[in-house]
Image 1 (cartoon, helix red, strand yellow):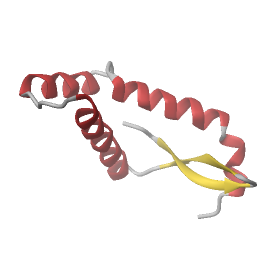
Image 2 (image 1 turned 60 degrees about the horizontal axis):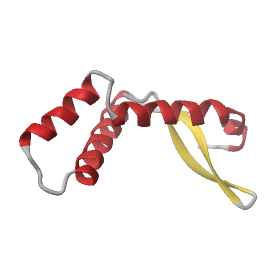
Image 3 (image 1 turned 90 degrees about the vertical axis):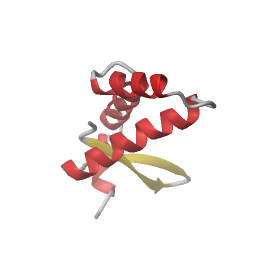
Length: 88
C-alpha cells in the first residue's frame, strides 16, 4: 500500500507531483485502483486465472503494482522540496 501519493501542482509552466501522506482508507483505495487498472490494461479476454495471478503478485509485492509503488516513492523523494509550495 502506498503511504505517499503525488498530487499535481502547477509551478511555473510545468505540472509537478507534490508528495503528501495519505490516510489508511485512501491507501486501500489506491491499491485497488492500481490493480484494476493493471487488469484492464493487460487483459483483453479476462480469465480468472490471470486475474488471480495479478492480485497475488500485488499482495506479495512482486508485480507491476509494486513497481508503481516504487516509482511513486522515487518521484516523491526527488520532489520533496516542493512541499513548501503546497497548501491544503
